[in-house]
Length: 361
Image (cartoon, rainbow, N blue to C red):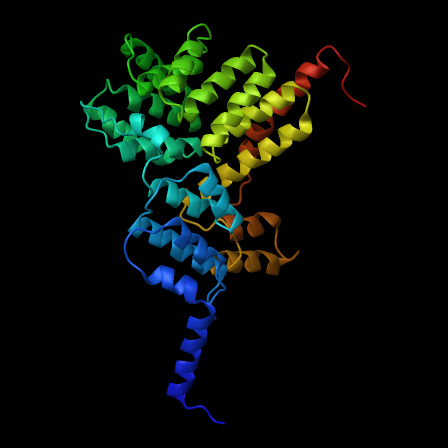
């Protein structure tokens, strides 16, 4: 039987709706998304012509435009990840959903001098936990140009400076926090002091500040990171690992928590566990770099990345390797700084282990 053009179009639409009805229905509605709707879309059979990557991209767009009706709890995040949610989708849901009740007391507070929005504070903190300091440095500096005494902006900018290797400036901001907060009152105040005193290695003061921040706001992952660093410095490695794990429990993409947990495992001479945390941290940092550059995290279904890869591979041995490198990265020079930074803790540990011993063949 010959099918006319209009009938063929209707048949394709019918197949599309039958196979992917659940996903299409969810993505065509209006109003805030619910977690059952998101899970339904993730678990639905894909319509003809729709890839998994396109579905996830559409979900991220919808979450940003429609928001989500309830807070993202750890149980809900586990369910979403089991259904195939990516880090990008989880981040979008976290930012565009109501605040977790444990975080409301801190996040709803607005700085009176600079009128900082709670959403901005939350966004800056999350960016820094993913080591994206360069992306928020200008915004934080703009806030401090209006009010140089804003301690929340100061401790966040101190972290951003440290992540961009501007250590002198980071130290100046940390010292400003300590000098300004003589009478801390809120979880934010104690959190700022926690990070400032840890950065300045004021080990006699930092534990009390970090403990108070965690007490006033149990959902303050940075406070647990500070406590963990204090435990590690005091060679209480098991307690340090427990604190870093708590921080990761509040934010599964907290790069610094993974990095410091790896150091604690190294100190316990458990390299297998250390490597797992190091690799997780590296994945988070690389994904963050891709986001800031506006690029996909994956080569799969990315035509631009595929073209660059094909161009490089097509050269074979016909061209010098710097030209092949330029075809895929845009530059001919290789920079091993990131690798040296990544393995710096291991090198330090090896230097300590080999101290006083003959090294060589």
